[in-house]
Amino acid sequence: MPVLLNSQNSNFEKEFKKLLLAKREDSVDVDVSVREIIGGVIELGDQALIEYTKKFDRISLTTDTLRFTQSELKEQAAQVSDKDRSALELAVTRIKSYHEKQLPDDTFWTDESGVELGWRWSPVSAAGLYVPGGLASYPSSVLMNAIPAKVAGVKRLAITVPTPDNKVNPMVLLAAQLSGVDEVYRVGGAQAIAALAYGTKTIEPVDKITGPGNAFVAAAKRQVFGKVGIDMIAGPSEILVIADKTSRPDWIALDLLSQAEHDENAQSILITDSDDVINAVTEKIEINLQNLSRNEIAGKSWKNNGAIIKVPNFEMAAELSNRIAPEHLELCVSDPENLAKKISNAGAIFLGHWTPEAVGDYVTGPNHVLPTARSARFSSGLSVMDFLKRTTLAKVSRDALLKIGPSAVTLANSEGLECHGLSISERIKSNSE
Image (cartoon, rainbow, N blue to C red; front, side):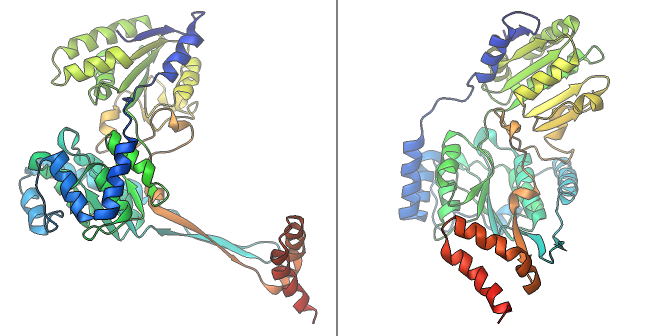
């Protein structure tokens, strides 16, 4: 059974902290193995990719087959049904439209001292997107990572998608085409991250790597950070639903299970002020678990990581939600907009009874790559901004330097940086000559 907590109980704070600190990730120490894989790719390049792909994905590649050809991509895309293609095209349109509104403006102004200041935005030149293969092969992940990169103006976008046992997901490859991906490689794991970061003869290095993956991919992203930028280290999926008596328990049950079915380490939490909601949702979850195709995964997730918290009011619900800082937050209450004003820590908020988190995974428009493991306290979901760099601009005239320069000289001298001060004072001195 999931954890049952009541905020009015004397031991609530202790039990709630225990819930917050619970470790859900698999404790797999893969750093040494990943370091060896990265070193192999740095040293042997394509040959390492070929050997690791044969070992881990059980397919034999050559330097000529590491990359999908355009004809292969078209052939695979042609296998997608009209219905599935139409759904992808709708998602592309909505995701692109939303992210286009995130594009920031360049700015330049003159301040009271006559100094011209500003900034400009420019995209990274190349980005690499990791797409999981096998069971966790999601075309929506391609859209959510590739579209903001292209909207930002990234000129070269490469994706790596493993094809274990030579199994290809046509929907993933079609999503790549619809998103404007330039290159698609059939490699995965830590070796794919290493290739994107350091480059091989076949795969040119990129400036930033995004996309989810297993423990090996996450460890590789940590190790190459600094050589390249990364988006985040994503943990198991999570959802928090705040529900009142106006909610539909059968809907809430499905919303909670929609995250539980991701994997056994996912977490689903319900906060409500109603015993009736608690009882009804719990009953509906048990009924649904009997019929789900992924009932074993969802069942273990709900049993081992699920939680139900009863609160006296929604002020308390908002307070607890901010401490949880969930990846996904559903507000299934009569006045979601007012409650949302009290929420400061959440990856994404879904307002009202008709906005299940699942629709946000695909077609609402906002990005579904979101901070997990309480990192919404200090970070945001993937956006156009992740593929842009801000460069500051400054132009100081002679008159402006006479006004602000002496203070800079004083500060430079206080830090013992003589040439810093001289580079300014000599210019000021030349004005009086």
